[in-house]
Amino acid sequence: VQTCALPISVDHLVPGTYRITYDYVDSSGNHAQEVIRAVNVVDTTAPVIELIGGASLTHEVGRQYFDEGATWKDAVDGNGSVEASGQVDATRPGAYELSYDFSDRSGNAAETVIRFVQVLNDAPEQLRALEELEVRENEPVGTQVGLFAASDRNPESILSYRMNWIRDENQSL
View 1 (cartoon, rainbow, N blue to C red):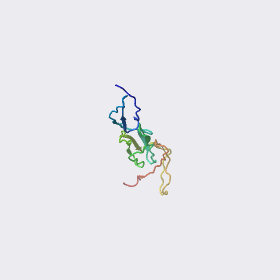
View 2 (cartoon, rainbow, N blue to C red; view 1 turned 180 degrees about the vertical axis):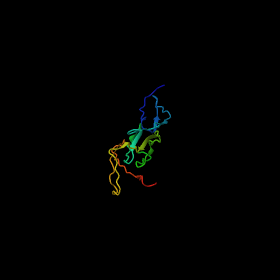
View 3 (tube, rainbow, N blue to C red; view 1 turned 90 degrees about the vertical axis):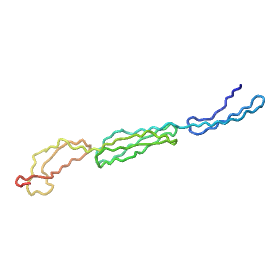
């Protein structure tokens, strides 16, 4: 029995079908029947998605929302960026979900990644009058009746208040 070492050209990192031909001639010049073997290298590893930024965010109502996105990494296809599916309506308070999906060229699907965005409109706190309120008859619309102060957890918000109704003790409701 004789053995021989053949240079085999199969790249286990690159999916595809590789054909290996076995041929042997003994010392007497006898040829063995040629054998061809097909070696299939397949990609069965799913890519991985990673969020840029947090998986759970809060966002102030009224400010435009810009999603940071996500990236994917794959052992064969390399890496890239992923756009979100779904929308965040920054004009309406509520809970929103953005999902990120990606499949590589071999059809391996990454596990879906979800980002939760909570659009909030926090109410101002500790509303108080800074001076005594004074309302006079026949003053023009928009006349200041007093100064107010409050604290607001919404960054860079502008506090404005309007007195909608004043009860006149001399009139019935």
